[in-house]
Length: 214
Image (cartoon, rainbow, N blue to C red; front, top):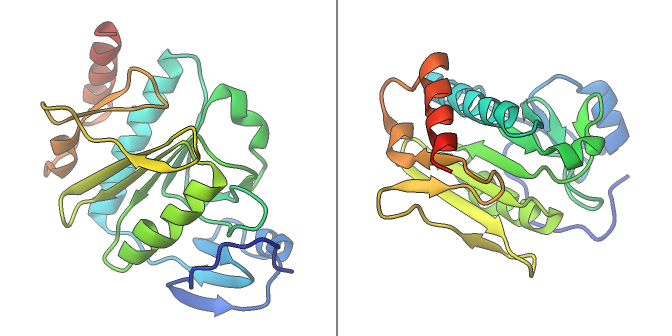
């Protein structure tokens, strides 16, 4: 039932079922906001308006960037990612697959590590996003991990180095974060805390401007 060689950090969240195989989880909870952690099915909390706004903006940003730079996919929860055998099946808020890794995309899961993962922190998910998922994504081989916390107005950006260790990558002096995985993508971090986030056309203009600067 449970995979071997597991990374054992006690999971947080509301457990709604136990003793469930990963295969049964995919079949029985498909399309629901759930995660599978070593046989336990954990229900994710409903998202806030701010959480939804941030997810929507970042998805537009990633999707537009990919469309103009060679393709790929942006996936949103409840799509599950199981980064490797022995690790939980998580539901990232956003996950980006570059063209070379589209082969790990299945009908209802990403069967491997996404190239970039974003978690938008909720009041009850601090430990899960910053500790549990950080350790899992690092071990599973996620190349870039963003933790976005609107309540604290804090964003952390990690890149998996050649030794398999997640290193913190800070924005530059102007407060702009330069993605390691999505070459040429730049984010003015303070923009994430604006009351009104950019819409479709403004986001498209941002992407075109950053690509012109490459």
